[in-house]
Amino acid sequence: MEKEEFYKNARRDLTGPLHGVTVVEATTTWAGPMVGCLLADFGARVIKLEHPDGEVSRRIPPALPDSPLTLFNETVNRNKESLALDLRGEADREVIYRLIKRCDIFIENFRPGTLADWGYGYETLCEHKPDLVYVSVSGYGQFGPLSERVGYDPVAQNYSGWSSLNGDPAGAPTKAPTFLCDDLAGIHGAMGAMAALRHRDQTGEGQHVDVALLDTILFQSDGFPTAGAMGLPVPRLGNQFGLAVPVNNYACVDGNVFAGVLLDSHWKVLAAEMGREELAHLTNVERIEQRDFLDGVLAEYCAGHKVDYIVQRFAELGLPCTRVNEYKDLADDAQVHARDMLLDTPLSDGSSAPLVGPSVKFSRTPTTIRHGARPNGADNHKILDELGL
Image 1 (cartoon, rainbow, N blue to C red):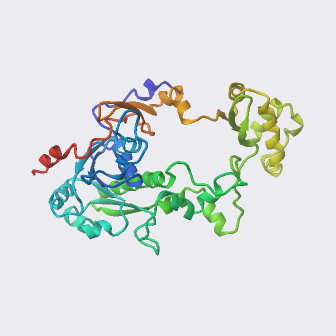
Image 2 (image 1 turned 180 degrees about the horizontal axis):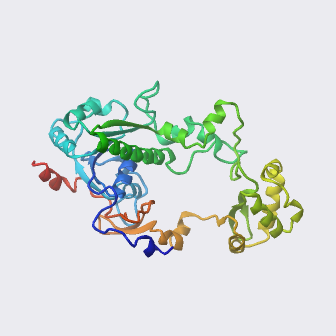
């Protein structure tokens, strides 16, 4: 399908499928802001409440080339408006309460109990907006024996057991290189907000949506927590794949590929390609039993060819394979650009950057990066004027 065909019935008068939804966000760093980022990308109006000194992501390196703006702030706070005020003081309380009356969703990711102490807990804000959807993101959730502990992304990765499966089998447990738990909490927070909004639209009832980093990584661990609870083996396999053999990262003459087979029919094709027809009869269960041997067979085959040959040959045979890229290799990648996953975006200091675009494509209500992250407090006058202040 061509892109134009997919978007042939697109409406260009809307910001996205959440056009008309207003979100107020009191968040910092990544997990909470990611909830707002997704909702903003989907077309909601997201107003970010931020201390006048600026939130943490404005100060976390790296800065963009020749710019004081930071990569993380520009990535997660695009498509939002910025209202600078002090949540902890009395002076701005009336502003926030008026804003809550006009919004549909409120997002926060402070330690449980913090916003309640400041006068912005769920029960308090419901007095001003009874049908409010209130989304809380934290390390361990709003209840439970660890709920009051500080919980950050790498802590959740290690507490959950996820890190125990990551890394080289002969090495130490290894955390993910990205903010994995924060990202998952952001995704689940956005889904939870939309589900609660659907319920509100049907019943008029708001509710408190509780998202924990720990819960989201456990949910997205492919059933391994159940395996652990029932004493089933959960080995660390590195780049190998637990469900199929052979699958791995293989060295070629001029680089690496990630390749392998999942289906028995694919294995027959690959065995013939490698000149090992005597192995073609092996089922996947039998191949798993001979994991190291068959992994070595495919490794030997790849070692005699260049990366481009392996990638092209696998494509011709209908087998899965890719060059092992670095992020810099995607800057001019045709697939990435065809999918609008790097969008050149004007930033607030007059520069521009190729920001990562929205991942979900909507044929009727397309989404995009409408603008970069706003300077702290850039929308104060507009928003206060709307509130009659």
